[in-house]
Image (cartoon, rainbow, N blue to C red):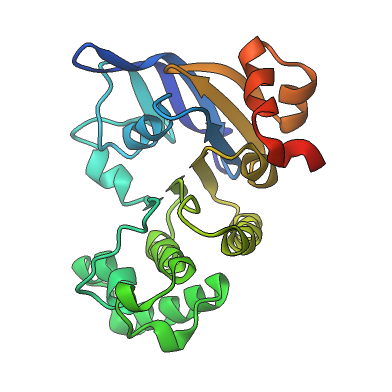
Amino acid sequence: MKPLNHIELKNIRKQYGEITALDSVNLALKSGKTTVLIGPSGCGKSTILRLIIGLLIPSSGEVFVKGEKVSPGTALKLRRRMGYVIQDGGLFPHLTAAQNVMLMARHLKKAPSEMEQKLEELCELTHFPKSGLNRYPVELSGGQRQRVSLMRALFLDPDVLLLDEPLGALDPMVRASLQNELKQIFQRLQKTVIIVTHDMAEAAFLGDRIVLLKDGKVIQQGSISDLRQQPEDPFVTEFINAQRSLIQL
């Protein structure tokens, strides 16, 4: 049985020299749920993802994944149980789509038959055409590159999926299509998902829970209804009102 809280950040502070990226952040993220981190640029959203996956170490405080503390000694082991998708996909340009997707599996010497079966399953899950597997990233559309990045993140069947502005660089129609697909994938796989976005409508559509940050602090967390109807700070209302796409919600 999965623990109630899959990921916990306890009194996290992260500084870069004199700049404070996160200040006394406490979060408990539930297993099998999608949490969306949202807020202005520079508020600490991406820093949280990098702390969870162990690419950064907090200046103070602790991060736990399934009860195990993230540290230099545990980061690599824990990282292999996570999938990580960044805004531009982070694909290697000299590798084909298939080679990008299977990169870590090959490094871990997974059986070729197992990898081929998994690749076929993920093509179906993400609606990526098999005809595109032998193409290089430059030969793929923006939406296809993000599908490849998502397949790579899912290839080792991670417990946790981290997505940092995964749709931010796409045009509105492609973005809307991928939002629908991501929501279906999250519901089907029931993984613990954490997404970073600037778009409150996207957060409301994809997230079971929204965490709004400002200047390295959590201002409020809850559903879109909680944030709209019971704002805990004037900034909450200000941020929502600035997003015209929420008019129809």
